[in-house]
Image (cartoon, rainbow, N blue to C red):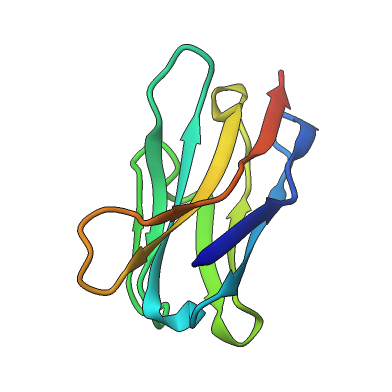
Length: 119
């Protein structure tokens, strides 16, 4: 079993930055492909960023490319999402998720952290 706990959300103004953290407990963190997702009120959950097991490969949604950076520290069992130049449309609950090697779907999810960007 893997437990994921997000932190770092909050209320900021447009143009500000936030760094989200997601810490894992349980099985070996480096065995998991990690993703960040978000869900805004009335909208479907969307993938924001993903990072491979060693951090060598990353993916970003077009809406955040150039503004968000995903990274991980396997020694600390933590994945980060650095969010710069935040926009009001980035307002959402942000979730981290873990996908085990060989799995198609994400197996574990955190409880989410609220990010609110005011204009």
